[in-house]
Image 1 (tube, rainbow, N blue to C red):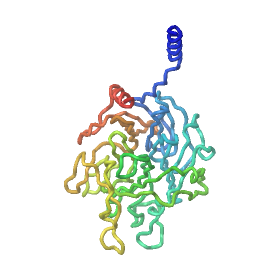
Image 2 (cartoon, rainbow, N blue to C red; image 1 turned 90 degrees about the vertical axis):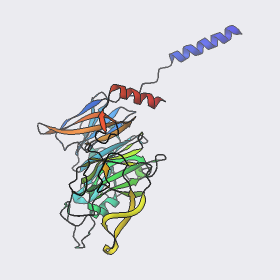
Image 3 (cartoon, one colour; image 1 turned 180 degrees about the horizontal axis):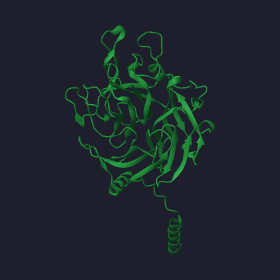
Length: 388
């Protein structure tokens, strides 16, 4: 009996040794270059941590690289403006803002990047590229505020465009506003014209959508006949008073470790505001109904009412306006990966072509220097925390 039991234990041990070891998760790079392209400048980046890929939006080109820096594929073939990106691990799709201002058509591009495996894939000829229309954005963009019955087009030199809406750019998945737990929703930020002569454009506008049923709404890209299939309204719409910035939130990112929304912008120019480059909102901050200061109310009486989120209570503070933030470049790529680490992109032009350099940074929280270059030790610490 004892021999039989020992034999069984030995066999079990040998079987365990014969099992292949679980593959180690891909190691994110400390730095990476996103290639050099005859395209628009880099608009945003996204990271698939499990798959080991980095995605770069170059306005009219999407590039996919692995963590080793090898080019895996590119997606091309549209004339619209592909902006900020985020990867949704729940469905394995890449989501990005896509604008056709002349057509008043604002979409979220939903891309099956698992099948992007070669260079030069044409978006319009491939079923991996789908779009979902956002009518809420189109309504605010085309709003005839001065009542002259005319749409003035893609220009800041008009009293039209509700809230100064110029379209959309920043996108990110995160929890419902006021929570750090629960389902993750796609959050989309308005572009806002940088017009210093009006007072109704000092808020960032964030829309939140449940994408669970978007497969029924998504349609192929058709630039000749832009479609209008999309959710009738967002599940939530909130406002964050930062002061006017040039084209609103360029990069939007939710940090799962810090429980915070980050908004990277092009610097504004209104002298009444500090014009920081990076703003943040705590995830657990509850939106409160209140005045949208500067936005005229019904019939011009008082201020319009909306759901307002307060800025996080950290960073530099402008005492006159109460606005807080950081003078940290975050306008062409800002992607947290957990453990207080975040990728920051820098754009450059080389011989007339566009490139992007991605650097992994560590959040310090310091008002004057919120990010420092990450090290291999920081990556090891992040990996250890993820295993715990």
